[in-house]
Image 1 (cartoon, one colour):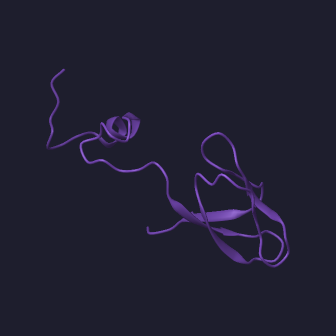
Image 2 (cartoon, rainbow, N blue to C red; image 1 turned 45 degrees about the horizontal axis):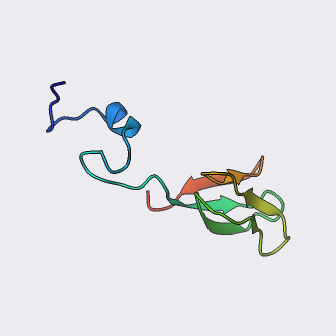
Amino acid sequence: MEMDLLNAEPAYEETQHKLKRLVQSPNSYFLDVKCKQCHNITTLFSHSQTAVECENCGLVLCKPTGGKAELTVGSSWRRKGD
C-alpha cells in the first residue's frame, strides 16, 4: 500500500497503534474534572486504575475499567495541555 508520508491522513493515524504511528504518541492524557456537587476541579489520569473521589465532598469522580477510567454521569471535564 502506497502512502504519502509527508501528508498522512489524521483519521488513518488515529486508528494506528501508538507505536506504529508516524510520530509516536500515547493514548493516555491528564484531564480536569469538575465535581457536579461542589464544583471543585480535580486533575486525574485518563487511564486511572483507582477510584478518584472529590477532595471536598467525597463524591466518586471516576471508577476504573479495563482501560480508560469511566467518569461519573453529569461531571464536566476538559483535556489538560490543550
